[in-house]
Length: 83
Picture 1 (spheres, helix red, strand yellow):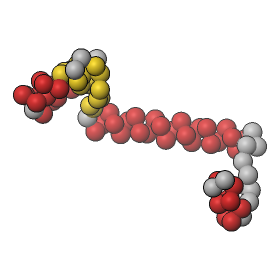
Picture 2: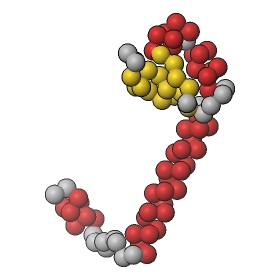
Picture 3: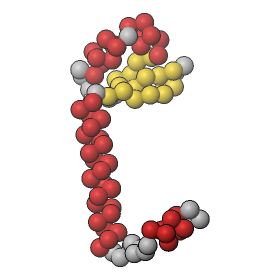
Picture 4: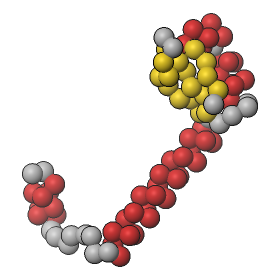
């Protein structure tokens, strides 16, 4: 994984991000020697979001098939989730 420092970002700007992302999908920005942020292009971000949504859909379908759901009125639902 590519790594740049906050100081490199400060001095070189977005161009350092663009050049590093040309090689890999993600870039770590360190602050005072510690990994602090991850930067990626929108295509990679959208791919990861789609993976999250697919995983949530898979989990929901599994819960439904296993009977892990509740059928109730809106009022009862609100009471249950706000307890």
